[in-house]
Image 1 (spheres, helix red, strand yellow):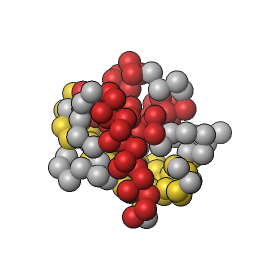
Image 2 (cartoon, helix red, strand yellow):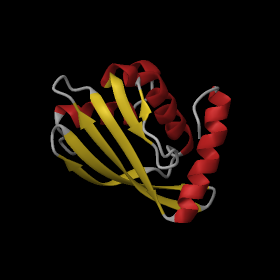
Image 3 (tube, one colour):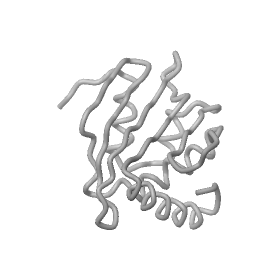
Image 4 (cartoon, one colour):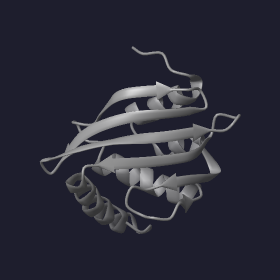
Length: 136
């Protein structure tokens, strides 16, 4: 098992765990900023970030999801991932930044190729609508 910084380890524990909303809430700063690969404006605040990350976990986080490469810089990390959605190969990165207290202050997701972005968009939009909230 790889050894990560304390910050990244908390993310990995959440991610590889049961995706408990309380565990996610505990690692997010109140003023966290989420950058979606679909929505052009940054989404600000814990509530909306939890909604997006929760929806992503339910749509992208299937059995095929895996992190390929991890660049752990202590207070910042870049995690390349791949998954398959509806027969479409999705490749992307999560860019995460933590404050001095180990809380996530910035979370950016980038996705490629174009067909993957279109698939993610459709799935995320549907999931967010069922969750009753944010723009997709």
